[in-house]
Length: 116
Image (cartoon, rainbow, N blue to C red; front, side):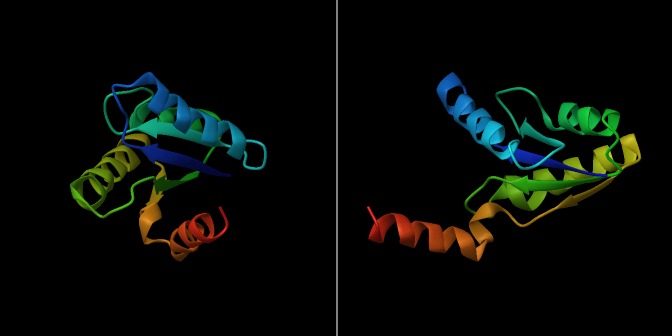
């Protein structure tokens, strides 16, 4: 069974983190075994999400970094976390390209701007 992690940066502002949690709840209507993790400043963290998915029976985990640009977190931190917890928990973890690299993201912006 595959599990999924939405990986957000995290914020000191509760409202910001709650917005990510709202996205998670909407996605849970159609996607099973999906968790949210924060890179910093909020919980749950990446390890907690991996542990929860593994405990639920996931044999692989797909991570979607919710970042717009390929900064240090995307290029270095996320791959390092995936490698560390893949080994530690003996589970395959695949990291997708950050959301800003997806062509659907550009189309979404276009739709917002032209159809408001």
